[in-house]
Amino acid sequence: MAEDTEKRYSKRIIGKTVVSKSGKKYGEVGNIIFETRTGELLQIIVSKPTGYIEGLDLEKDENGRHLIPFSSVVAIGDFVVISEEDML
Image (cartoon, rainbow, N blue to C red; front, side, top):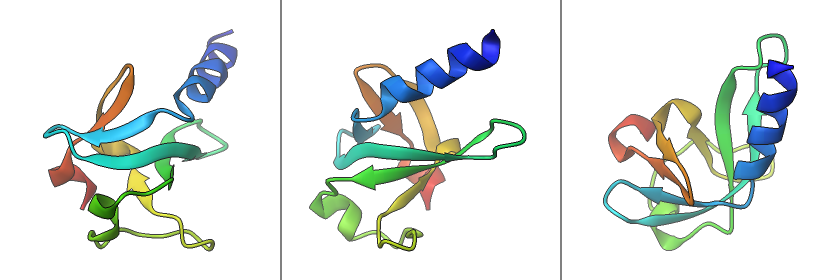
């Protein structure tokens, strides 16, 4: 039951705007990369990137999309708020 709840929860954050604690908009959550065995959320794939994220030296996937470590997420509500210090 808990696993099913987590699946529904992760689907709800796709499409949310990704912002920093200081209010910089980085784009939207395009998808989430997770460890299949444990369900641990590893990275956010950013869609619709803004100029703020383009200037950062972030890891990219095979399609050139920016990846933000999920460990840098500090809050999820109307937005996905990340800590800039933890994402680099």
